[in-house]
Length: 97
Image 1: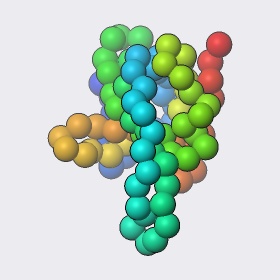
Image 2: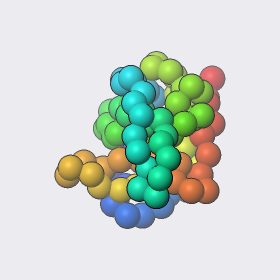
Image 3: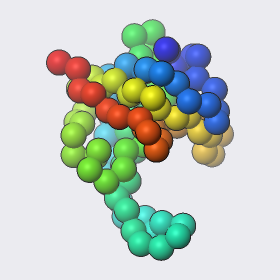
Image 4: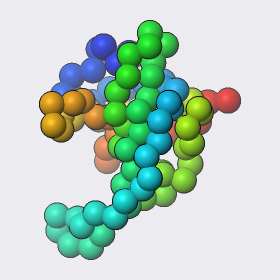
């Protein structure tokens, strides 16, 4: 799948992105109590289209800028009129060499 094929509130099978920007992680308060770490990244597909990526907790330390990752069974949502992708509840990240 490519960035241009993504639609808000839908899942996707597989998306490969090169990380072109990684912001500093931050702490957020969860809706039902407790806190979590979250980090926003920008990923670019092979066509040069970009999308925001949201990583949570342990995922944050597995990916750095200039690395390529594959998101498997991911989720797309819209926030502030921008699409964001994440692993959602069942997805996973895979680093590509």
